[in-house]
Length: 115
Image 1 (cartoon, rainbow, N blue to C red):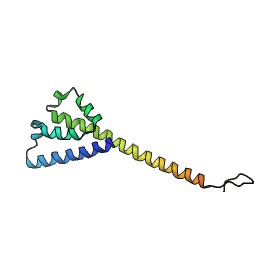
Image 2: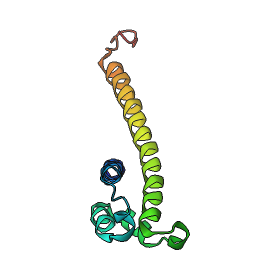
Image 3: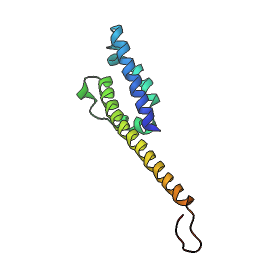
Image 4: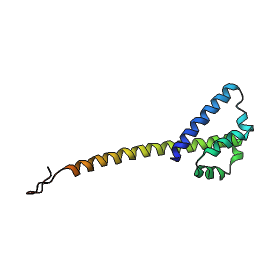
């Protein structure tokens, strides 16, 4: 699912930032668009379109900082979706168990009661 891709990419971004920071070359992210382009190419198409339509890039000081901010927003939304999806799976799973249990009950031919 797209939200899982966003979560994974955000974790990769965090790792990249930490590694470049440790190496003392974090400013590469602001000056070399290859990093941003590599991540962009892995984004699901809907998120690429959302990024393509961002107008306030100048407010962030660099395209990378804007991208990182938007990825943070995408990440938070994706975490909420993951939680929602897991909750729905649990709900649907519980419903299926109840339905299966109800179907397994036998009705008495004489009195029509469930047994």
